[in-house]
Image 1 (cartoon, helix red, strand yellow):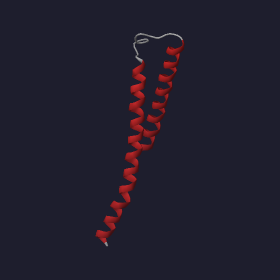
Image 2: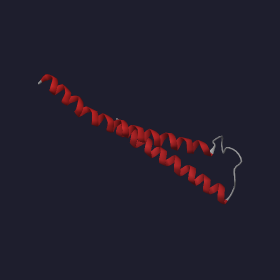
Image 3: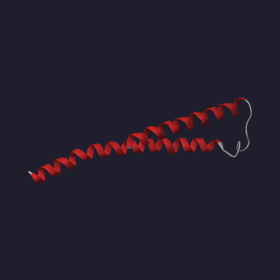
Image 4: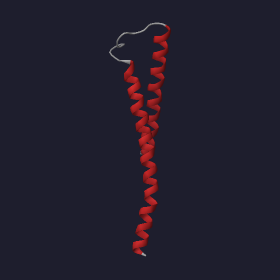
Length: 82
């Protein structure tokens, strides 16, 4: 489950970064939009990219932490039972 969350949030974050970068390039070359386009601000994609990429990092870190603590928990059970 953690891997799926990490994978999906990573790719959604990458898509948000690409949209933000393309939006900045279009504004720099052609037209500087003073406000939102169709009610959506460019900063929305930047903030979403940060949130999704941090969610991906947190999911991977949580999965790694669970993987590291599970063998320790089984060793303690074996020591108590033995």
